[in-house]
Image (cartoon, rainbow, N blue to C red; front, side, top):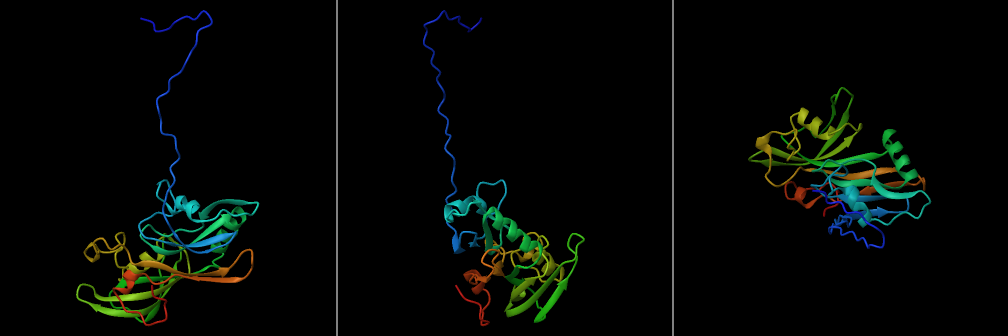
Length: 243
């Protein structure tokens, strides 16, 4: 049986379309903005969120809701110019113009952006040291300093570390500390399962960024406060700002 019908002219044709939800979703996710100008911004990344990727809930998707659009001719959608792991917290650098994104990426490639991290590590450590171990077949170097240590029944020792990566390999700090037997507390990927703290996350925090502003040409330094959850584990009397 055919459903076709011949028309002879003068008929009125109407099309009925099913109701389809076409509104664009906007991620409502408040971020702490520590600095912002027309070229770049610095935010404090919380734990448990990807910086970018195919997921809806990412820092990149939240930036438009939290930052002002640049008034520069090459202004674009704000974008993170480096990554922090899903469980890592702390300072994240954002580009707001096409030239700024290019220039900031160049600073990272030239290793002229100085990054510092805080971490809680497990086990007794020397007061300071240097870790040099290949990562994915490439040279990698991390300097560390023990800021504070406390005895622990479960972990023997827990240490508050200040870390300075001299190279930028993927998961460098996590891999290096696990390699020397002092894994980062809460590291599910490189740590021992028996050392996990249920529901506490990983204790790695990007605490400081220093570089020459690519447009003002002035030296800039940004510092994030030590997270409260770090303070609950180890005391700190070494001049790092408390939350």
